[in-house]
Image 1: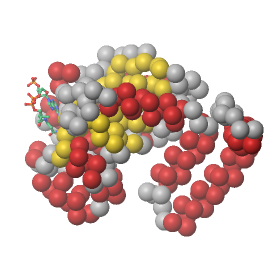
Image 2: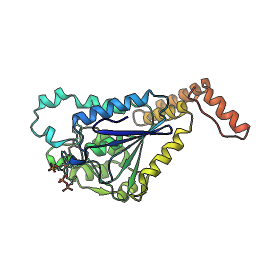
Image 3: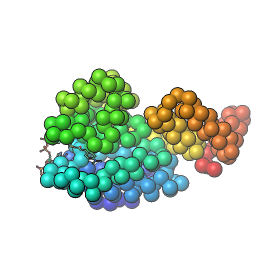
Image 4: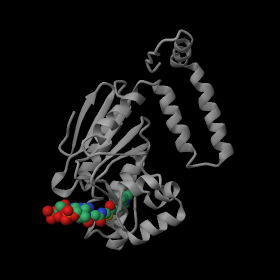
Length: 257
Ligand code: DAK
């Protein structure tokens, strides 16, 4: 399934979605965002899809929100466009999303990667929240998510200077989990997605939900939430299958039931 700005293909139970606006380094204009969100929501309810890999080109994951689209906007225009609601819909996708990032991953592009559940970077990836250079600040959660990932002081330095940082630095500060050669980062991301796609879909979703809860709540409430999700999994066939397969020394076959 493909639309103008998003190319996608199903590989096993993994969707590979590619941002496709090469002339603008995949800058995230409203039509691209709308296409991406609609597809994400379709995949989220498609039982054949168990994991999503979101990527761009080797040159750019995404160089940010579309500056040309925002340059002349008034406060009222920005408010009416209700862009935040678009980002909220991405946040609500329940299946795991891996960002496979190469080249520029800036501003809204970096925020999009941070909406994903893991970030795998190629050695050429360049991250940054350069909004300060445009007289604004990150608008899709960058001040919050980057701070939670890298801590207050690093987030201050990165956001207040707007400087770009490379894949190795992103790895050191905990933003990305792997740095791989440009030739292999996408294949490795797909392999990782396939590994995740083999697990029980319900357990995967509950694990994602519970981990995300850790960023929204205190420890006691988070533990309480985890416990409820844990017990609820005992109502699934996949839990029976997973534990039975262990006892019978065979590979589990998860059906999502
Ligand atoms: N927007 C629009 N066009 C962009 C773009 C962008 N963010 N980034 C690059 N392009 C376009 C360039 O204008 C150029 O188009 P033409 O001139 O050829 O028509 C083409 O892509 C190639 O770019 P360059 O010629 O500049 O390529 P270089 O290799 O020389 O430089 C660069 C690459 C990535 C260093 C440079 O393009 C650059 O600095 N780009 C801007 C990076 C940036 O500042 N990004 C942050 C944008 S602000 C919100 C949520 C989120 C946001 C806002 C609101 N709400 C919920 C309300 C997010 C804001 C942002 O992301």
